[in-house]
Image (tube, rainbow, N blue to C red; front, side, top):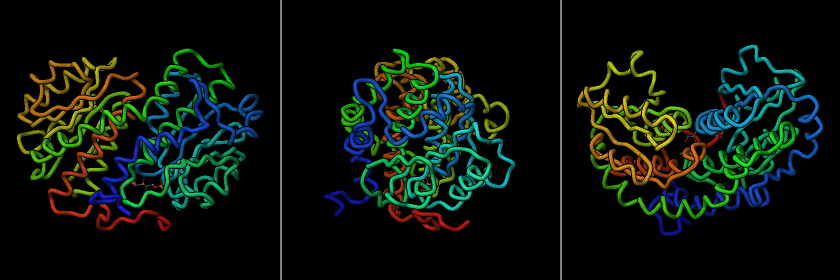
Length: 364
Ligand code: F6R
């Protein structure tokens, strides 16, 4: 059932071209969003929608964060996001003009479930993105969008993370179409998502190289992931993946925050993993890399194909194909997943069953 792969996690990483294809099938066509699951909410979105609030945990929260950056760039709608365990105990500013988007692979995460119950009591509409048909959160929502990626067995979310981002962008585009009208820029992003399965085939060809590089990082005790803009959710997700399966302490930061504290940690024992595609924030990221290097930190970076100056700035680097800025969270995800997978395996750990973790978090 592992299809010849050593672990489910590796199988699921390699399934991403197919998983993404089924996630967007019938949802994006020729650059246009088709989300029939929200048909009944279209009136509400057109007339009443004033704010979107994203509620999720862990990796699903990181997908939500990428979506927040997407909406911030391409729409005027207010978007807020909170992890579900905070949302449910705060006084969330949601009402009958709010669309709450819950993201939950399992559809059973207790905090997310309680979060949407509160939102519904306050009169909000709820749409859920989930991978498990008939699970509780989508059943209790006004709209349910199923990811259709096939079951995910490995405890670490991989293919469902990328499916979530693709579906969220399509959903966002649909909301923009209803409220403000689609633009060519957004259509271009959606057509590029349609090409993502082929792009993933290319990205996944780097697996052996990632394995080689990961050897250099097996014996560290810490790792700092940094990114800016659309690179920030990737930094958080990279750090989460590494700590949960390799038990190496890792944290993700907005690179601009380094100076406000975290840079004090850096030395030859504390490497930096930089998410530095050739996007609008490249030069800013480059300064952060140089500052990190000046502290003798080992640097591994993911950047865009052809950016040869990266060789001078880093110890190790990997290229990904050039993409629209908003799509780098999708393009880079398989690399950070493979990196943590190989580090865990080289540390003789079972990435499918990390200690202390469950696939479905149904208790607080
Ligand atoms: C990390 C991971 C967890 C989940 C989180 C939310 O790899 O899998 O962080 O993302 O527990 O789970 P769902 O999406 O099922 O609500």
